[in-house]
Image (cartoon, rainbow, N blue to C red; front, side, top):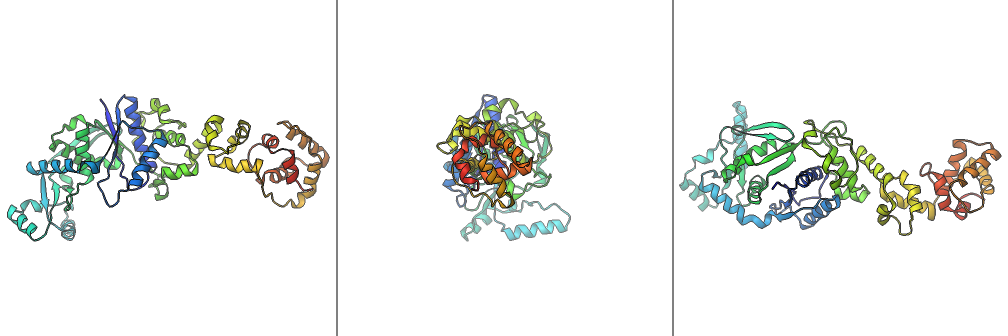
Length: 441
C-alpha cells in the first residue's frame, strides 16, 4: 500500500511552505487509497517544544488534514542507536575527532589549492589505539557515514530524471558526539521501518535524497522501491526569494487574521500549475491535484491572490457556514447584506457595529444642510430594499444633488465609511430610529 509522511519539527509554528508539503502528501495518499503518517522530528531536545507539537496537530486539523498514524522520533532513540551500531559494524559509520576549527582550516586549504572543500576522510586513518587514547583523555567522537562511489539516480515525479554524484559530497555526520542522531539518519531509519513508499518534499532536498538513498541501501533497504517528488521552492510575487515575512507566515497567524482554511488549501494546491485556484477543503481538491501538472519552475506565492480567493469564498459562503463566526444575534439577512464586501470574516464584527451599535460619523461640514434635508425626507417604516431608491430620488428632486455629491454624504453619515456594502440592503437593517440618530437635526 502507498504510504506517505509529513515530518515537521516542533520547533515553531507551521508556515505556508510546510502547509504546501503537508497538503501535497495528504492529497497523493488519499487520492491513491494510501496511508498518511504524521511524524514529529523532535530529536533536537533543546529546540523542540510540546506546545509547538500540539499546535502542529491543531493547524493540520484546521486545514482539513487527518492522518492514519503518528509518532515522535524522540520515542525511537533506541532504534536509531541500534541502526548506528549496525552501520558501524559494517564499516559505513566511522568515528571522527576533528574540531570545527580543524575542519575549517582543511576547507580553506582545499580552496586555496583549487580543490572542492570536501571532507578528506582523514579520520579513516585513525587507528583503534589512537581512538581509545583520545577517548581516555575525555574526547568523544562524532560519526560520519562513508558514502559510496558513483552517483545515485531516480525518476522524480515532478522534476524528472535526477542524479546526485556522491563523490562530490562530504561524508555526512549522522551521530553527534553526545550520541544524538541527526535528521539525515533518523529520517531514513523511520522511512525504512514504517514502510514509506513515496517521499514528497521541497526541491532543496534533492542532494539530501541522494545521500539518504545511499544510507537506505546500507541499512538493507531497496532504494529502487522508493518514489520521490520534489516540489520547486516558492518565490515571492516578483519571482525573487520568498521573503522572511511571507515565507515564515504561520498558519496560526493566517487563521487569527481570518483567512479561511479552504482559501489556503485551494491556493497552495494550484501553485505551480496552470490550474486556476479555487477555494476548497482538501477532500474537494483530490481530483485536481496531479504531479504531472506541476511546473519545474518555482511558483510565485502572492499573498494578494490568496486573499482574493478568500474574498471569493466569503462572497459565496452560505449563512449556516458563517454563522458560528458571526455575532450571536446575526441573521441571514445581515450576512447577505455584508458578505460581498468582506475580505476577512472578522470584518463582519465591524459591520455589526455599524448596523446595531454606535458609530462616529465625520463632521458634516458643508453637507450639514443637505443632511438635514435628508432627515426631513426620510420615509416612514416599514422599510425594504426599495426604500433607499425612494429616499434618494426624493432628495435628488428636492436638492438637485446627484451622483457622488448625493450618495457619499449619506453613506458617511449612516456608516462612518466611504465605501462598503450596498446601502439599500443595510438601510432596512439599521432602521429608522438609528438613521435619525446619525443625521444632524
